[in-house]
Image (cartoon, rainbow, N blue to C red; front, side):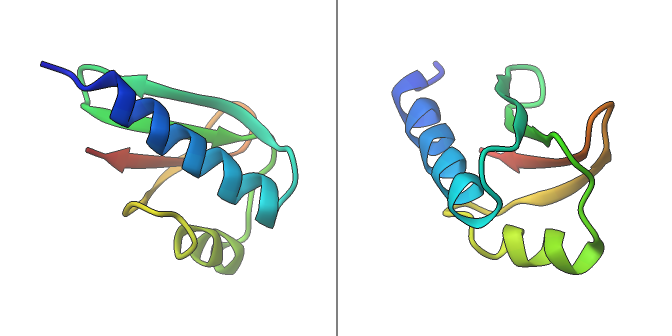
Length: 78
């Protein structure tokens, strides 16, 4: 059974970190049920150093997931 309260809490924490570090630049932030992960796509591409710095700020482990249609993507496996 999926604990959506925990997922929403983690999404709020992710949103807070992104807004504090980069400003409001989230294109997409959602839970992908089949991957059992939260996916984040920004509105801009980040350089590798900037992406590493951002990943170190998240409350849960993040992995670089490539570049999407708008910008850098991250995935948070739960």
